[in-house]
Length: 159
Image (tube, rainbow, N blue to C red; front, side, top):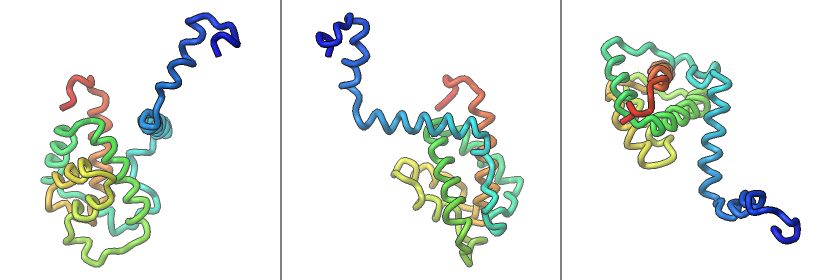
């Protein structure tokens, strides 16, 4: 191509680098673009409107510092991915299904199965046992708000 188009080395360089682009890079690029879109939309941290009222029970005050620790002590990228998948769980499962024992089932039992990989499942297991399925919406909202506040800190503070 360089010889056919008579390009200088500096002009041809981007074309040469395209061959190094792999499918794995596309996934990272997609996640980055999705994150930019969600941040620009500025509703990612809010619970979905169609979430059933059953899953919007207020979180007790003693649980709030535990959720703060959960968010603050987590890797920023891992927590972002967890929050996005948590919201998808709210939008899909908990906007259509009523679980009879929701007030007594720990949230992490159901949320863990909704995660896309083991690392996220392990992270979900760090949620407190007394955060129940009925707290799924408000728990998400609290964690998302804490994450948003934390996101304003320099990245060197991430664990």
